Image 1 (cartoon, rainbow, N blue to C red):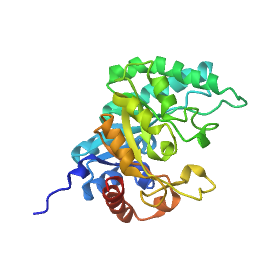
Image 2 (cartoon, rainbow, N blue to C red; image 1 turned 60 degrees about the horizontal axis):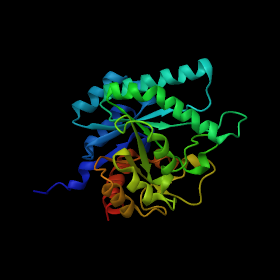
Image 3 (spheres, rainbow, N blue to C red; image 1 turned 135 degrees about the horizontal axis):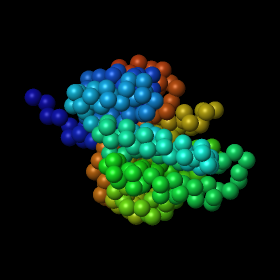
Length: 279
């Protein structure tokens, strides 16, 4: 009898890695490949229905590692800002129903016509002040995800783990945490210092590789672990040393991966997780 590799107990497949798959298909791929957890995205969850998605995950014996995504706080004011906050509250409700421990936040870029980065970052703090108590009530952690600086203008004015921790530190750690996503933070010379500082703030750990040359759409420059430049084992060890022992979520944005047969992509994900993230 083959003994199950205990490292698989922490593997989660983020739904974006098999982007063409519905929630039922993604759940089936996890089950077929002995992956115990799944990271869900709101859009496909809405297509399937939140309640049905939650039941599919439970019935398959899986757990939800995260729900993506909330945020996009920086470009809204007045009535639009209230609508954004209301949508984030709905996302927290959905995460709670799905059993997700955290809602991943992409905070938003510079408002149209603005060059005021400090003000945009201030808006992130204002939004969290509104949402953090509600997150606590729902038992779901808001997970601030710093994105690589190349996304600062249009997607996330929070670019480093240090910045994310500075913002999160104003709130209880059970309400606001941070995401350590290898693709976005691997380059940072302060990374390991900031991971040590993060301690109980780490809400999610995501992995994929950094490819060069980057494609024209840099959002799609993520690769399968081992196909790029990131040294994963020291990063994983640092996150664990800081106290994180939760799921390790593989999240890949890549047209070639998305267009490939999930029956090939998912077993490859398992193999690369074992041999590149842990080796």
